[in-house]
Length: 229
Length: 102
Image (tube, rainbow over all chains, first blue to last red; front, side, top):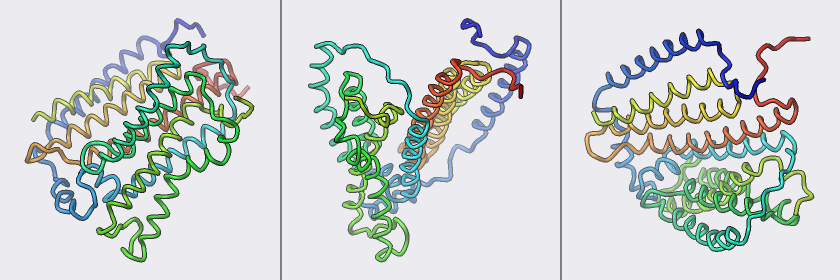
């Protein structure tokens, strides 16, 4: 196909499509504008039970306590995506450009800072905006920076240690969910007296796993091929 | 009514993405379009979460959006790897127009 030809549809169809999509936009816009000014609030419910959740940040309370099952499945989705990427086989390794002394020095300074920021975000998630996913994203960004400057895990670390890091978050989540069952009676129903510690532990392992999974997703099929430095 | 501004912007992003998803042939453009559609949905959710009696927004839609962002990232990474694979197999970055069975 001609590289200049980005558009697959012939012109008349594009105009028809434009009309259809505009109609959809008007319909959706009308639906939003006709909503009542006051939603059925879940905020009150969250605030009423915030005391028992173990954290003071309502978003973290929803993520890690009230709707913890969603977050558990979300970790599973991340892992599934990585398995999907790895099952597509090894993609050809492209040699990156030489990072040069400035970028290398910058990364050496930045990465410890980013790990520190990730730790702070994880801790802050209990009472302020922050939490495992934000911290994991920062951690993954430092991993991607390291990869871009040509750093690779040694062969000793790519085997079992990497897989443990990838699985730790989901594993800890499920383990704690099952352990609390005799006390609370339900899967993932933390006893309120220990909720803060359990949530912090789940978040800490989840941060590690999210960082590792996102970095591995960036690397794609290039970790399984082996034989790289 | 302030929430409507965010929600309407989200709808705008959603339909822009939907149009590009259909019109563009290049697979990476389709993935970018899908991501823009997703961002539109997130904006609608967060915007509608502001319809509360007080100034504090509803935390439940925010937590749902946070979950959605992570799933979107995972799906995008998988899709990009699929494109690399398609390109390695066929040398093309778009899908064939007609699937003839030889």
